[in-house]
Image (tube, rainbow, N blue to C red; front, side, top):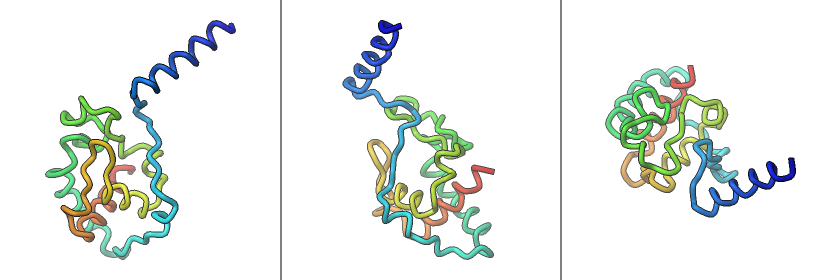
Length: 133
């Protein structure tokens, strides 16, 4: 039993040392991101999500896949893999956290802040919300 536990710990250490990250990598936005409020009203969210879907198809789908499950062709060689945007791990985050991540990027994910307008990034947040349904 001790050898088994030692083997697991050693394997985990080697994976960490080699820079290999697990797909369910926890990417945490800073605490302040939670206070970012979605400026799109409830009445406008459907329109916003439709605009976000168009942006997603041209900018995000290549890595996150057609249904946002992180299985796009462009993401196959990435490490860590693109997140499954339908997962509870993503969907349980507040809008401000998702907005912050879209804005700032990480690793191979593009920093969209300088490329997309603030409104476009909120449209993407609203689209991501539809993926959890």
